[in-house]
Image (cartoon, rainbow, N blue to C red):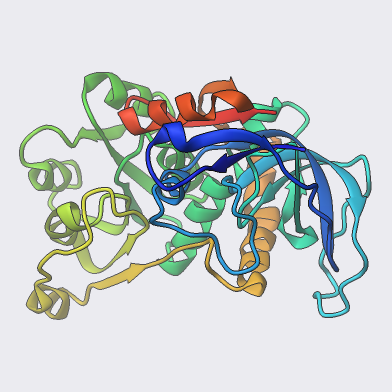
Length: 331
């Protein structure tokens, strides 16, 4: 089969299409004929040699796909009894530990969800990773209906879905975006309060928008560069969840502020979690999030879809920073 491989760690030019052996489904897995794969910042890090796949996972990049089930592997006696097993011919989306940039991929059956009929392959492919990230981290934050949620980076692949998910779950959502055009586009997603993070005094903007109360939960993709501001806008008992490190990995933390206002800071990742935890995340999506996708309340924001053999161009586009929503590769 054809797949995109990383010739050696480096720039986008290191992504090349090669013939590689077809994957074989193991116990509890399904073989997928991939129609489209989503792109994520994790793919950029893997290409640079900074985010290797977990042990046993494919070294082909790609963490999410829309596909048709081609075959089902032998039963997995250790899998939970309620793990769904799609049948050959079923249209699914899947959350992968790797292997999405290819004509075929294998994945645990418990990491699949139905491909919504009203979505194209490219649109469906950009849902699993971003929604799993948003959903699982709102769970980590114990976000409750009626609370205020600030999504840092509301114009990105995770952000555009996180703001919609927050609203669907009954949260009062605020978001940040860079520049007036992106602010307006995030506002069009149904978020009345979108703040320009390129403007001065973001903390003041958030506190003004909330009547000085601050927010209960911050979902942050920036990391170190945003830590002080994120803590400053949290209300008492507020929770900060760091899901990205675009602004660095090290910052000074005011522990006195955490103690005096009973704040908490959490950091999570998805790909490296044990299979049982990833199955649980997807089960949560199936029960609580997928109905909003199926009824079109929650829609992907697809910036563009490129052919598989233009993966290098797709990576350059994502790295350039102008993408609104997500990019996909069509296989």
